[in-house]
Image 1 (cartoon, rainbow, N blue to C red):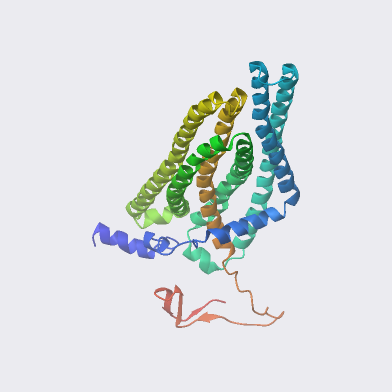
Image 2 (cartoon, rainbow, N blue to C red):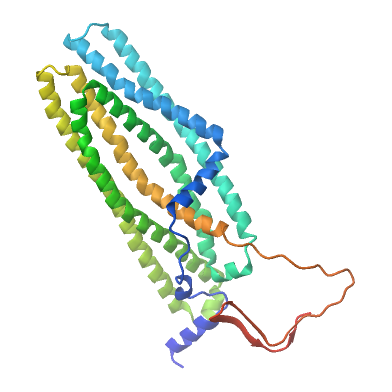
Length: 390
């Protein structure tokens, strides 16, 4: 028998080893974003106080961020002689607003960190409780490393998103809405010219976000498969060596690692491109404001202070949009991980129906002409001879 034939025979007979085709045969989760998001939101319902506290802090910080440029506009107009007032009072008020803004940022970080840990703790407890109740069929047909990856890597992605991305998302949305309102109030003509870049932002986000989500889902799945291969190799090392299975195991790991590398590179590329693209669009908006703002100021439609405020508002308007675009990629990764976690939570538990033997009752169990298979086309036991068990 050749070495290749011997390796193939070993692959069929090594207990507990799952070949690549079996692991890659079927998808691990449904592609349903709305249902997944609804289930994630359900975890936040149990943390109403923390969520309310975080939203209050985010709202206060956003209001401070929107108010500060208006105060700056007033200070510039006082210096330019276009407005009456006491400059020292205006500067003191600006300092107080910026100080409150910093305090709100600190409290926002504390609330979001506590919220993420509470949500992740509950999710881990539910997942572990589900794993110990899963039927043997599930663990025999799924890689152990993949199950562990769902408990660690996928939930960690959710934790990172809750602690970092969600607060920035809330703050960004409120900042965009508030900034738009103030810009329209100051000069609706200049505001509309600034908003023209928003359409470009939406188009770029729509094009890039779909690719980010597709490759991030694939990366999470491949990471679970890679962990499964390593776990099987470490746990069954003696068996692998005894059956001369080293070459097949190395080839399996290398193929999975290569696929994971490609998926990771593509995910990082499309996620990383979002930031520069959004910055470029933001710079275009800045140029529009500088040119037309100067023209409107010369015509007497707005003051110099308003132009300075618009420059700050333009940066303040584009920054949350850029962050939201980048956060969207992180959210896609978290949703992909959540789908894998919920796929385990939705599995049927072990059927524990049956009766306990009465005390002193005697019974004997034997195997005789027994056939068994998790999947009809892949028998595990086929026509076993009579074998007493006890």
